[in-house]
Each structure stands twice: as C-alpha cells, then as structure tokens.
Length: 443
Image 1 (tube, helix red, strand yellow):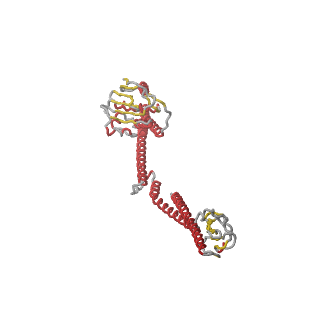
Image 2 (cartoon, one colour; image 1 turned 90 degrees about the horizontal axis):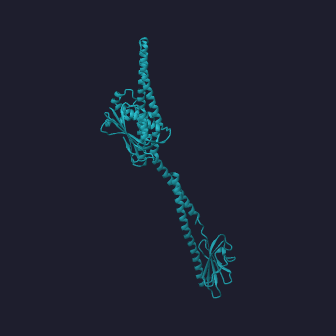
Image 3 (cartoon, helix red, strand yellow; image 1 turned 135 degrees about the horizontal axis):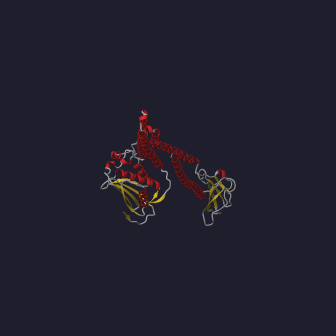
C-alpha cells in the first residue's frame, strides 16, 4: 500500500511538473522573444533620429547588430560589434521584419531565434538583427531543481502518511492474527477482540468469532460423541467381562453354553456399535463408491421383498421417481428407517414414494405412539436414545437415525420428522434425477 501510494504520488507530481514546465517554457520563450523585438524596435527608432555607431545597449542575453546598406556592421552589442553579420536572410521587399531559428547563427553557439528588421533610409535600407537563445525544455536549471525537490518531498510525505495509515489500519488485523495464533483446542473458548469502529476489520473479527463458535460447537460434539462412544463400547465389554469372571469363580457349576450365549449377545452389540461407528466415519469422509441413477420405487420394492418384517408394510409407490446417488447407502438409509419404524409400530408401516416438483420424497410412517416435537431433533443425535426406544430395544446403538440423516445430507437432501395423525412420520427429500417419467401411485 505504501509503495502504491508513493507511486501514485510520484506519477501525479510528474504530470504536474510536466504541465508547469510546458506552461513556463512557452511563457519564457515569449518573454525572451519580446525582449529581442523590443530591443530591435528601439534601435530602429533611434536610427531615424540620429546615426548610431559603436556598442549598443540591450537586455541580458539579447544580441543586436545594425547593418548599413552595404551590409557592414556599424553598431551592435559589444561582442558582435565587429565581424560578419550573424544572419544572411532579409525580410521580403513587402515586409518590415522576418524571423528564423538558426542553429547556430554565424559566430555564435546553440540554436537561437533571429529577427531581421528593415529600416528605411534615404540612401538605401539598413537592417537590424536581434538574436535570443532558444529556451531549453526545462526552462532553467533552478526551476528543474525546485520541481524535483518539491516532488520528492511530496512523495516522501505521502509515503510516510500512507505507511502510518496502513500501519494504524492493520494494527487490529495483526492483533486478531496474534489472538487466533494463541487459540488452541484446550483454550477454544477464547474470542478475538472486536474493534469499536464499524468497518471491514470489525466484520472480520465478528466472522472470526463466528467461526470459533462453530469450531467450539464441533469440538463439543466431538467430545460428547467420544464420551458416548466410549460409554457404549465399554458397556458390552464390561458385561461380557463380568459374566466370564462370575463363571470362573465356580467353573464346575456353570452352564457354559448359557454363558457363551450371553457373552455372544454382548459381542454382537459391540460389533453393531463398531459397525455403525465405521459407517459414520466413512460418511464423514464422504467416500463415495459411485454415483448412479436409482429408481426409489424399485429400491423400496426390492428391499421390502427380501427382508422379513414382523409388522405389515404397505407401499404407496409412484413409478419413475429417480435420484442420483450411492445405491448401497440409500439402501442403508431405508433399512435404518424401517428398523426404527418396526421397533415402534403397533402393526403397520406405510412407505410412500412420490415426486414434489424437482424433489423426490420417501416417507416411512408407523402407527406407534410417535415422537414428541421437542424430541424430533434429539433422535438424530449420535447415541441419543429415548426412554421408549431403550425399553423396546435395549441392544440398540442409537446410531441408526444419525447415519440415515448423514446419508441424506450426502445426497444433497434432508431427513426430518413431520407431523402425522398417528405414529412417527420420517420424510426424506432428495433432488430428483433427470430420468423421471410419469407414473401413478400404486397401492
């Protein structure tokens, strides 16, 4: 920023200096030429009054010569009193004066403006030559030095001011950077200082604090998940260990097949938890196996036909409702919803597939007691289980519905619980594929 400000200031100074030099160059040239013309006119006037010989007075820098009708120099400034005329041109017969630029005039150095004047005399015309040096492009060395010094001073002042302004402006940014560098996972509750001024720096600080809030929430969820996972993994291990230790206290009187079955149940619960945790880890990593076009009605028909359920399943399927995604993961989502509905249904589960504009909808509705509105978000939290769910299925992991929601998110959709006349109504919405065709709702 400082370099840019200095460069802009230098450019502006260069432009202004150029304009000043150009303007003064013209004025200085006009002034010098007026001096030469005035000196020549004065001498022409004096020649008519009296004869002139010897040296003539002229302003500094102006060179004047007076020539008689024989083109002899009879008067002039001191250095040009003797010698040949400084110019050879004359005004035309109908003109009084003429001017030219000679580089250089005879006996002189450098380019000069030379004015030739005709003076009428009875014995023949006399001539006056007045010469003045051309004005250099920089007008004068003093002017050029002043312009350079003033420009450098302005550039220096602008650069210092820009440096101070940028340093003052970025000081809060540096403070935010330092505070962010000190924040660690163990001190995640800290926040950066929000400046009082309502500017971009304040919005940056607020955005940083909002990001830290989200990170804190993520860390808290991770800690809670780790704690819950540790507890749920420890429970079947502790149960199996207790059963084995109890059996070893009196191994001769223990029914080892019964103990083995109990330990096997604990191991099955442990395996279910580990399997669900691995599935969640894969979903968090978003590791797709492949994307294909999937007909939801066909998927539901196949899965319902090949699975044995204790409750009656009633499908309401609209043909041609397709989505793009991972077939295995969508099957897992449907299976988790059906497992959950089977645990809470009294006798019937309704599955509906339909289209809503550009969205494919899959509903799973059971005829159970339902889920109260205040618990509808809770059931999607990992390892969260309601009291009714624990009573119906003590071996559950509490990961089925969270896995289903993660699969829905991976497909760009949503999985929510919506109002119904009876039971729990889970609604999956996923953007439809481009292969949808017309279809009817079947029983």
